[in-house]
Amino acid sequence: MNAPREQRVAELLTRWRGGDEEALSALVPIVYHELRAIAHGLRWAERPNHTLQSTALVHEAYLRLVRQGPLEVENRAHFFALAARLMRQVLVDYARGYRALKRGAGCEIQLDYDLNIPGKAIVDVLPLDEALTTLSKFDPQQGKIVELRFFGGLTVEETSRVLEISPATVKRDWRQAKAWIARELKRDKDARRRSLEQN
Image (cartoon, rainbow, N blue to C red; front, side, top):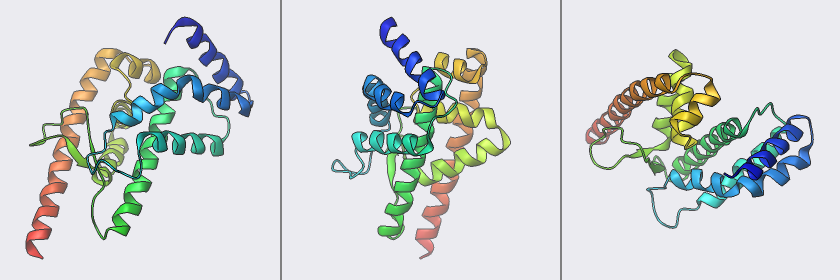
């Protein structure tokens, strides 16, 4: 993002934080392509005509931002962190609805990050969310790092700025968190396979 756009984003975030709800309407078109890139980065693995496309995911996250009203958003990276959390919530809500409709069928996404899962890094949204929620309970910092990187598409440096920790700490926690989540997802996948074999 170039300097004038960066300044405009900072100005609009300050106005929105101060209670100017119109500032959010002015902000979204400026950062829309970045938000859409984040949504698209989650790459649905389920099917090409998925009903929740990247654009719809961004719009739903935007509507949730509007409903929440002005928030304490410090800077651009913090705004994208908030957007990442909202997109995660949208994905989880969609996956729950989809699972209920399809009687247990999962709603999967393909992750850009290697989790050392055999085959492609295609995971069911709900077990991923459950693993992340569990991780966040015993290590909130690692949970935030995963959310920012998986769902927000933030770089190590951006994650470092949002959480006010060193890039080295982000990298270390990111490695540990990915390994832990990979184990949890494998455990969930094995349990579901055993359950299917028994039925």
